[in-house]
Image (cartoon, rainbow, N blue to C red; front, side, top):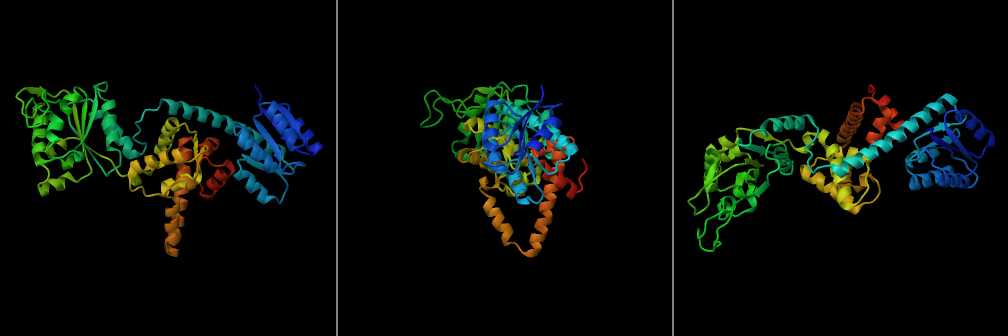
Length: 453
């Protein structure tokens, strides 16, 4: 089915000329004023509007605002007179796809219309795809950077053996728990329980009974029937010991015995219980240094260190920042019934420029805060809680630092565009959608940074 184009221009000869030029390929409607155009849009489904800035009743910019607010899926190409630079800038800010200057070249017009309709169709498809992915997305996303792809390959290898322990280390907030859940989800025992124990949140007096349970009458105050520990709760699944670096030494000794013998006794019990599942451990401490200080058992460290997965901090893997931000945004759209579909180009730059001292946990909390407090369909820089603070730091830097910052900023933009072009296989229209950037700005920056398509 042919696309439908609405021509909005108060000059009859121009309307007629455009109608004759386009009617062979498209369904064409025409309007001589803003009000007439609104009536047409209310009656007929339109794919694209050719909109003159100078109209007799309301301005083309006002009509553009109405279209953007009520039917954002409609693409708009502005037609302007020479010298209306400010109007062009305003139109692009309000969401116009592109602009043409009178007198309009017919070949340029046909090409711009073709690209605009293609852009609009791709935009609809990507929106539907993201919506579908968002509805079915599991809460597991480890990243797409080379480092995380390598970790994903390691997970595939180690997840096969449920008897081999895995040590996961990295800074607080980098996603050690996510990696642990990913290992479990890819394991043969993925349908069994996943049980997490935060060793730092349990007192040293209770850690053994928490992990191994206790028998009837094991100590004063014990339950009359005894208690099942976390190892038994995990069954044939996975027991994840987070913050293992702070586990007391006596509990470490018993854990080592479990790893070696694949069995244990409840506190105060005499019945041997077999361990059927997998044991994963995580730490943000340097366990090798802890061994030197006598705070961690060397034999346990060697047993756990058989397979170690080290997760780099988020600032060292910038390729993960935007995919993770979009992932968290999709999840919060579902949970909070919001409709954020885009992250503006400027917001993307701000996300990539931030140092992320809190790593993925900070990024996840940032996107949840935006979804909770803000409205609309696009994340803007002002929505980011650190944006004003980061901007102020840049303003307070010295002239030399500013010059370096400017160079870094250009490098950041060129890398971001290069990444988008690679992701979209060199298709400029797809890349513009991917980066949420007007196509004419993208083409300008491709030329500016001499990027190959």
